[in-house]
Image (cartoon, rainbow, N blue to C red; front, side, top):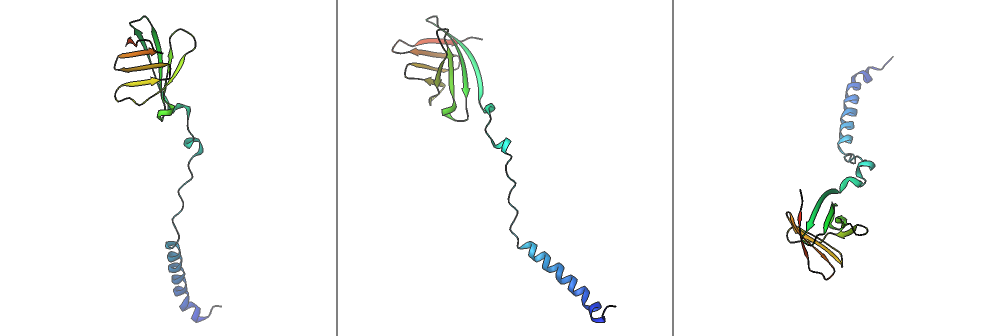
Length: 131
């Protein structure tokens, strides 16, 4: 059997509890953002874009070039095959216009379909991209 006073106070007690619960919820800090997906956040080998071109030079040299554009300048390079020995890896340099890849001994510069290929102190060979 319940007391008559409890019957009159029960709605007030329930209402006070609901209000207190809402106030406590409002004072909580927002939940943290979800953790990043470790698979999606890890770098992928597919971040590089690769373009190929073949150049024929006026001195008879043929250059088969794979341009690898990485996410940074340090990751970007040109892999040049001349048919003589192993392919050459030339790091990308900052060019005012066009392309520039170089090592201390080899240099490939160009813009559009035209390029120059320099080996050591030889005169630069003028090259043109083929279709």
